Image: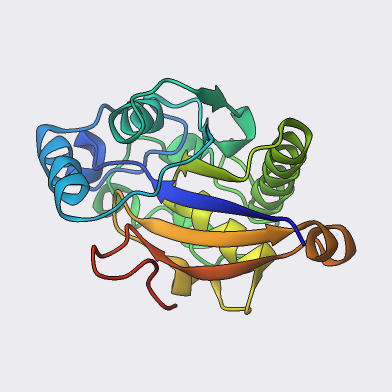
Amino acid sequence: MTGYRIHFIRHALTEANEEGRYVGITESPVSAKGKRELALKKEQFIYPPVDKVYVSPLKRCISTAAFLYPEGYARVVPELREMNFGDFEGKLAKDIMNLPEYKQFLKGGLNNPPPNGESMQKVVERCYEAIQFIVEDMMRNGYHSAAVVTHGGIIMNMMSCFGLPKYSPNDFACDFGEGFSVLVTAQLWQTAGAFEILGGLPYQYNNEEDDF
């Protein structure tokens, strides 16, 4: 049975991340620290070779993908963008923590968006659109491996919504430049809309894959 390996990778640390700001659709460049950390990880660990790279349209993901996979065979997938935090974009949590609308947002839920922002339900829906496009594109073009360079929140949703075994989104929180490898088989995807979670990445040099 044909299998398709997909490696989900979070973008490198940005300037706004260092400051602790909400950055969803807001552009923030990879910081000098982020570049150093990513270069060190690439030197010390293994980012698996791939046939294709799919990437969020935001520059922090594009630059991360270009560094890890400089061959230049990347395809931008708009649905891989981070959540739109609306009025909270660019804000520090400490500056908005007393706002009633922020307290309401922190209650969570699929249909509890930030003001002028995006609901979690919408994020889940476009996560499905993104992975459906990627799987179909890989099958159609004969790609057997791919990297998906995107955002922490998107990876958490992808893994918790479509990954087996099942875990909560918070169990898939990953550091910058890190993520998870999955195996998609045509039968499992077509019958259950699911993929098998293989483990975390990047890989240690003495192991082909980490156990999850």
